Image 1 (cartoon, rainbow, N blue to C red):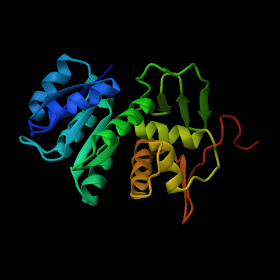
Image 2: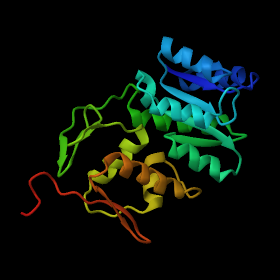
Image 3: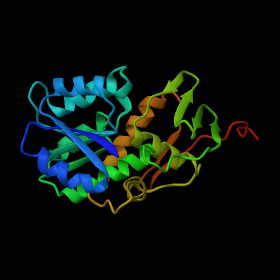
Image 4: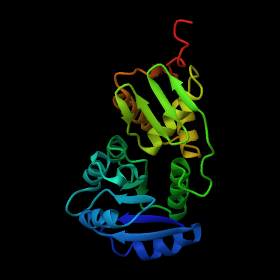
Length: 236
């Protein structure tokens, strides 16, 4: 059973949604204000957050930024943001602040369940936990795929689950060029022709976090690739 926390000021949304999500092995709790969400996060363990963009006290984007920027144990918790229908700006801002996915309101509960399942597969919180995998070592970056940790000479790099999966996908095929559509389809596990701009945002976030290591290369009109040589290969 995966535990979810819904943060939405629409009190009527939670009961029917909790009933529907229960069939997918989700247990949904709900709060209407960010302050209540922080109190619940401090006291309980949740596997993911469903975060509305419009909230009292602070909006969902400010709350997402606070969660991602803090030192609390839950700073890496997967976040799915609910945004206004067709509002591309909301989606861009949410992803830039560290949200793992977005869904436009009004939404279909089945799509919400599918996106949550994808997020949780990426974070490996489900029963199919990752088997031990080798440490990927590159010139400037190490990726521990067993512990899902990324380190550079400057120390550990804190990544969201989506950022980590993007880095791992590229690093497993150094030099291979992935188009934006390929990356979205691989990360979401579904056709993703609506929002290729999301990849540019994810790559930008990764570059900032890995700086000064230049691991990701942009090929105009083609896509992105992992550009670092394996440890010991440079100059060979």
